Length: 140
Image 1 (cartoon, rainbow, N blue to C red):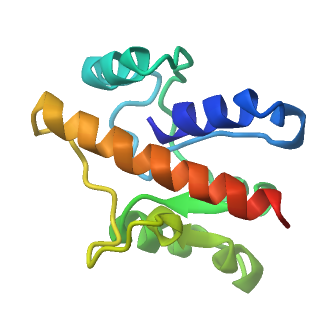
Image 2: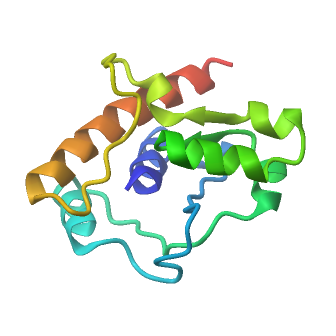
């Protein structure tokens, strides 16, 4: 969901030539699969029609990408273990560090076992955080 939202924001600002956007999981449970149907429904309801197939993160991703954003602390820890050096570890941040709505919780909750409302709430969180992240990195 986050990849699709960020891609749409970048495209709407005409910045797609400046970005290579990708997402991957730290576990291989759904490799090659489309997003959850509820994710697709929330995205389409919000005018977003790009969906990528799931893939597992590779150690080479950490050297390749400029920013690595983890959705939760467990993913952040898993990614840090893949890092080959301090430079790669420094690229890894929690996504919600960029959320303008500060909260005690720094993680993006996984709506998978929840209701449709949980997917909508996660969409709203991801959208505002993606917007703030794009604003921050566009100023650099």
